[in-house]
Amino acid sequence: MKQVKRVAVTGGAGQIAYSLLFRIANGDLLGDDQPIALSILDLPKAVDELNGVVMELQDCGFPLLKEISVSGDPNEAFEGADFILQVGAKPRGPGMERKDLLADNGKIFVEQGKAINSVASKSVQVLVVGNPCNTNCLICMHHAPDIPKKQFTAMTRLDQNRAIFQLAAQAKVDITEVGRVCIWGNHSATQVPDFVNAMIAGQPLDKVLSARGWLENDFIQHVQQRGSAVIKARGKSSAASAANAAIGHVVSLQQQTPKGHFFSSAVLSDGNPYGISDGLIFSFPCISHGEGNWEIVPHLEWDSFLEEKIRATEKELLEERDLVKHLLS
Ligand code: NAD
Ligand code: LMR
Figure 1 (cartoon, protein in one colour):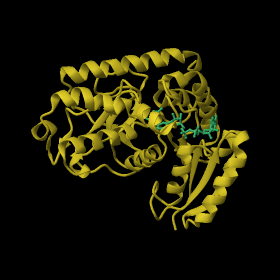
Figure 2 (cartoon, rainbow, N blue to C red; figure 1 turned 90 degrees about the vertical axis):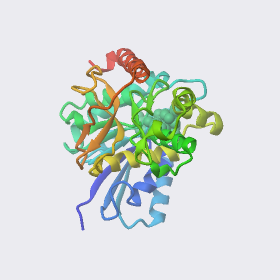
Figure 3 (cartoon, protein in one colour; figure 1 turned 60 degrees about the vertical axis):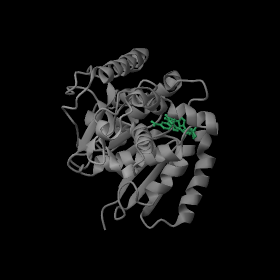
Figure 4 (spheres, helix red, strand yellow; figure 1 turned 180 degrees about the vertical axis):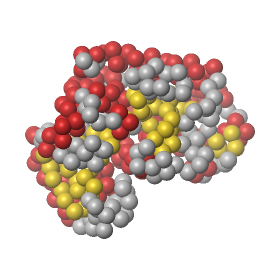
């Protein structure tokens, strides 16, 4: 029997967590031979709801779930954590952009960053989901100076999954035929879903799908605006698909990436091979050597269309960083 891994999830009483916690407890995050201790954090006022979630987790009888604890205090919830999935933050409503959440959500990541620094395992891996996730991740990392920066990532996997579905549907191929699709930049309306480097059925996408007009317009806008479309349709932001993406993100980082594949993850841009400004949490194509040891995939080509869009998403992230400079000092 492997040693128990401690997984902390924030926003435990919220809608993403209601999907995520059960999948983690089922072994989808760390494998079906990995025992887990779940530590669930929410605001103190949500502790009654959290207790209800705990009852349901107990009632599933998950064989891998060895311990469950709930807390309203990050210093308690993150104690000894090997993985922290930071979901707890306000979601946006109709008509808002994700960066409109910065004023409310940014400060959560100051407090939680400090708690991670004090009490989490020094090899903890942190995934930020709460929006705007790139800049929240930057804030969190800044307040946890004793934890290696490589251990902080933010989630653009949902955007990647959305892009893959759209490309498969347009090319009329099975979804498993679409590969090497990455998201560049910010998890926002400026994000750049890259069709230029994508492959379909082992061939460059443009050999299979001659639809440049659709790709430059409908496809990109569809992926950029999918979060808003879900909010408009459901009245609430995406939840099960976000939980699924969080699982996919951690699994991709934990496992060695098969040759020729990559995945999207927002990571610290320092020293990146694409000339993006340092000091941002920017989504790049990444591979993993296993156990969270990621690397940015170099040498993907940008045409002038892609380059202009990538510069726009970089500019937006620089502006977001400026907006929170008081939280980064
Ligand atoms: P929700 O409102 O259903 O749940 C959020 C939970 O977080 C609530 O229970 C709330 O009490 C809790 N919370 C708030 N502040 C907290 C704090 N300081 N500490 C601990 N818990 C706290 O929201 P949701 O739908 O689960 O979404 C959560 C976040 O994830 C939102 O910011 C949303 O925009 C974001 N999101 C990101 C992606 C992505 O792709 N990166 C996808 C979907 C949603
Ligand atoms: C999403 O992409 O679905 C989430 O970031 C929620 C949102 O605000 O769009």
